[in-house]
Length: 185
Image (tube, rainbow, N blue to C red; front, side, top):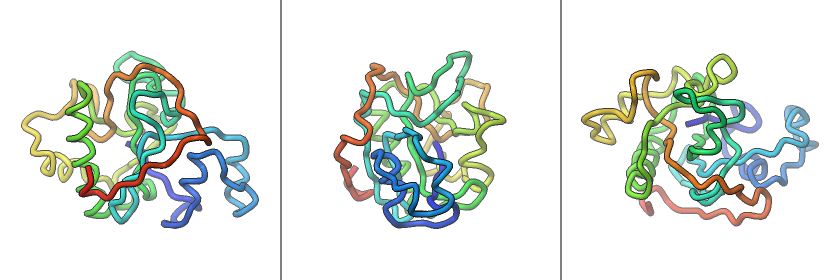
């Protein structure tokens, strides 16, 4: 699980979608200049409202984890599903986002053998700190009615669905965004 807002601390607007589709105008805001040439994507984005957008098919690789390692396996993009929450590292998230995330994780668990649910901070410690201290892991566990978390001892608590994917690259900038309401999962 990752958190993102563009510009930092501002929610809504087209900027995150534009970034993930490879069409962000880096001249639109002074903070975007650092993103010039960056090619990133995620499988899913959960807006503050709970709306879920899908950018990359879950059987394809998205570029969300960067330099990363989970339980000795490097390059988490090769075997994980990236879920972004619209938000700012360290801030809280909306109830609608927790509900949508729980529904999305349950849906993914029916399709993939989820081995762990972790944050960006767990797969790239020291480099990334999101979703950060504002993310309520206990709340997510309650919503999922988890008897035992999808963890294998090493990580703090859950939030990034790690399932096996085939490792094909998603079509960044050529994908059609699939939009669903949180209840549509």
